[in-house]
Length: 271
Image (cartoon, rainbow, N blue to C red):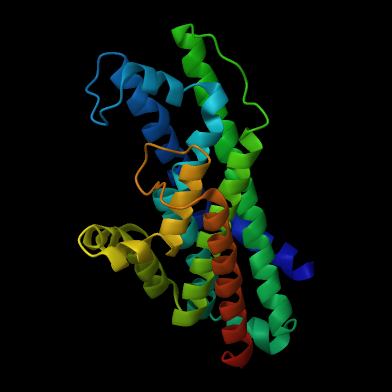
């Protein structure tokens, strides 16, 4: 618990944490509500959505889908960057060397970082839900729609959001430890999350085996889980796998990334 508290204090006072959280909240509001509201009221609808689809996407009862639909690609990329920076920066600053030399055991230090990142991610998902709900209620009230608060199904979407966020967090931690620095970890993570999987998905439309592979890659699994809980209409959201299958793959990725990162930290980083 001491390691978790120390890491939480560091992340709380670290400007990068708040910048990334702010960027994500602005993105989810802009793409989820601002552009849709403008398109609904005479703007150009570049997403080829009908008026009823736009209204449905902005309804308060559908806020769970609004939260999860952005996480497979852009939201996941931001979470990955946060995790990669949180772990990788310790190598550049020399704080990992100090911690491993004079601080707690390596497993405890790593557990503290993972625990702190987990708390930040939970708070990020919760804050995303609150902000989206506030925006949805505001739009519905301005437009005079009949609306209701989300039902119990919202917990399924939030659970999927947490699992997707956990996978991207583990991926970022693994890259930060594997590369022993923030810059390369962030670069590789962004390239994978935004570029590589999309390119493979494009090639997969021509090559059957490659297309099947992309469905179970980290981003593909996240997209399929988002699609299974209703998060349609956003880049990276897929409907190729069932929700259960996608969730199992994501759990496997979380275990692999966290386990591999911890093993590297214990076995390789002696000082």
